[in-house]
Image 1: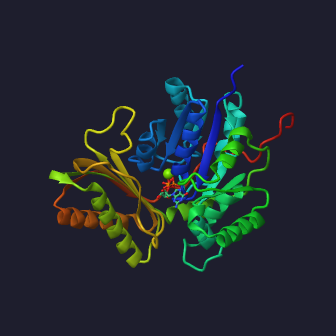
Image 2: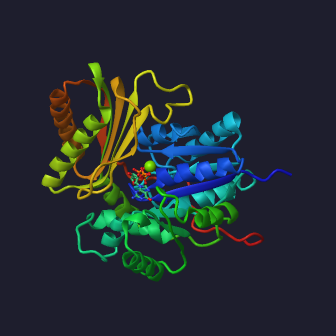
Image 3: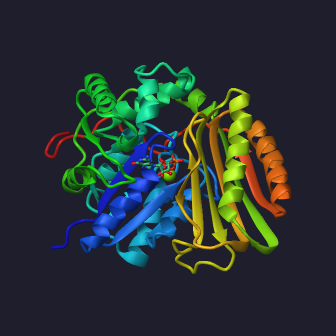
Length: 383
Ligand SMILES: Nc1nc2c(ncn2[C@@H]2O[C@H](COP(=O)(O)OP(=O)(O)OP(=O)(O)O)[C@@H](O)[C@H]2O)c(=O)[nH]1
Ligand SMILES: [Mg+2]
């Protein structure tokens, strides 16, 4: 008898490295001959993440318009669509980075309602170690306000597996200190330390989540008012912009200038960026399966006091392309929109590049109202 497909959810706060890790996990499984289907998720349409994972050649379904917990039926539908198209043996789902309570509202319902259809893996929660050190008070630098921090800590509390990502940015003493603090505060959690970017430590984590099942347990308690208040402190902006010029131009320089412009203005105004991400896709690139690596650049900025980084490069200059900008920051969405509008105007005019905003949405996430919430998962034979 064929094994049931496995459902693996990789959570963690905005910018922790979920999409990077998801692509690495999918690559790893594909190399072992397994068929993989990916599910991306966001509060709105126009997603950098979907463009990013699609450019790596995987079958992807996108669930826009709310988190998995609030769109549980869409999640199941997305899995069924992928099943028809690509018959994956493993589904890998990346929830929205400001979302928590995933065990009670996604993992348990999937197991209880669709347990015959899927094997559900333990929930992994990734952390950016610099952010985690600040949130846990190991470094004395400003992070998010109290209610956003509440969500961050609740994500860790419900994790069966905590993955300290980006170990390449820490020295050994900082990593030890972070690992000890996490193990002390969340004693029932298995902690792994990896670099999704460089591949270090991934094997052990992948082995764990592809061979273990979600544990039967009690879901954590969560104050939905504080959770909703925390989410509503975050401003969200998704924009799609056409860029064009009469002669070939360096798209990555334009992206970098836009990112630095937005960073400067938000940092000067005292707002914390959770994740600013962009893709620039050459016009005419891609097929129904999406653009290829080399036809698309990806830029990320994960803190107000860090630097924008290119995580994927364009192989050549371009004359025209589509820029997707996603900003998540602890800031007023109107300010995000006016900032991006000004920076686009100034940057494009300085580079002699024409721009046209095709789509822009800016908002605060609505109060989460999960489709299901199950307090407990009974062990087999119990209940
Ligand atoms: N130094 C370092 N950077 C990493 C590592 N893994 C991911 N990153 C970088 O972290 C940034 C954010 O990565 P993403 O994978 O987009 O993060 P995410 O958690 O999916 O972000 P959201 O979907 O916005 O919540 C990118 O610049 C990545 O290249 C790592 O192991 N080391
Ligand atoms: Mg992502």
